[in-house]
Length: 80
Image (cartoon, rainbow, N blue to C red; front, top):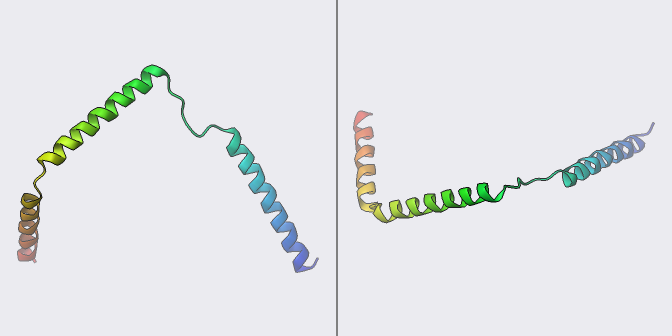
């Protein structure tokens, strides 16, 4: 058997396997369907988390964070 024939057989088998995997993936759902109550609960939770994060960002002081970072770096340098 020549190398070219062997290569063609390998490529053909690979294409068949990929086609089977593609068809299997298309048939299986890739998302989860939620009922209305669960979806509303998730929406409320995400909204609450978003509001909480936004309030923390408003309260976040960049200058204080930079000072604390510099202090911890200086302390680490001293410990070396």
